[in-house]
Image 1: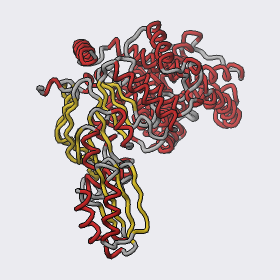
Image 2: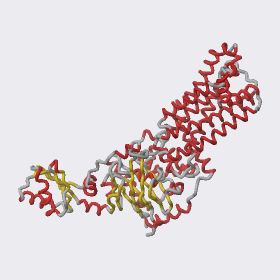
Image 3: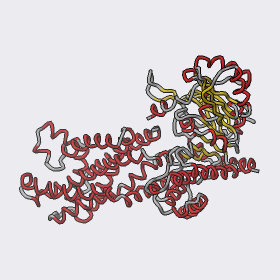
Image 4: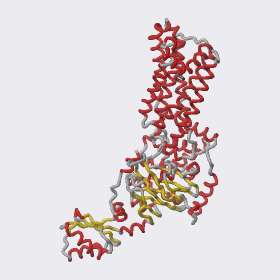
Length: 274
Length: 330
């Protein structure tokens, strides 16, 4: 009898076999994985420390320290520093995404994910989707700190909302670079180390805090081609001017290109990992 | 039985770890497996023998470096997504999410298998009940005991009712009571007609659960058969002897072989002989013969065969190859 049952269950199982996950499967699996990541955040709220403390601290600190020297006054400096910190915090937050993904991948549950008939991108895309919440919190708090300090952006509500969306989207896109690092690095610490090495030059050698025109020529050239500068220009156009400029289009295009390159790389090296 | 009828059909499976050159470790060096549907097949071997690696290749968790394998006629290397639909894997260390509760884990895996949220909840409740975990359903896994984790892990592997289940050392590290509970659960699966591929370090586990056993050592299959066949090869029990005069070990071996009918395994440096006995009553005959030949002994003991003896008998060396391969993997 058991042989018969076995035969029948094999026959039905073989009939139901699908060649690959459909786009709908992938989407639903990604959302399920995002649910898992959100549950984890809910139970380990210390994961939110960086995106809560950094915006408050950095915005106030940089504005009061550099405001007078750079812009002649704190209020005059706010349009520069708020948009700069927006970009900086979302970059830091996406570094944490890569680090946490690496930690997560070492856990046994990832072995099971690999053994399941699910889309290979879902275990990566899920947590990254959930981390959009972190970028959103960071961007919101940075803006709120600015408002409290007297920042009145010229772009109005629509400009601010558009800028906020761009920051979050840029954070999500760039996090694919760190996700890829997470799949190739040997440890979470390594991701953190490499991340810092990329992050610091990119954020400080940009126009986040100081206009590039005050820098030596060679540095100015670097700052001009720095993708972070690109994103910051776009954010400033939206939030401070309320204008949809070519900068915004370039920033969006840049983000899309980053995802198009690093998402497949990340999925490939994740699938190969032992 | 034709090839496509086999649950698992593997020929010459090879897995190497490490870079090219001298530090390459061959973890699996050409393993053949033929497992029939509805059968419980045990892969027995010491730590680092290549059991988990073999299983990982069959479960598409590791690429196959040599040979080929198919599951229910589906090629493993070329159709990994299909294989993942046919196989449920329960890992050596419970692969469930520490941060989630038992119920949430099962819900998550059911959702990933394409069940609706409501179906997934019903299925999770069902499995929790079946594995005696209803009370612990709302507890996070990090608060579970080892046995509870394994049971939940096994439950998670059954969500899609896969026709083939891999159990990688399901009871390693469990206490004897939890172990026999786990065996009970596995027997229920068998009764439901699942095909099971089980790896274990314990002869008695393979003996209890498996219809057929393959013994693996250093990446190679050294024997295959029913538990009875394997045990007859080793002897139902072993007589362990120590001689007073170590230099007489060879003489004693000749005599013992005449009486017992099987060649003893020698440990000359300790003056020891391990005599495989098809019948424990033969022990007395051996002892009497030794005394009549004036070969005096310091100790004698009759024991059930252990995995070590199976290995000694099958490979001529003890299970000391141990952790080399495991280390190379890390």
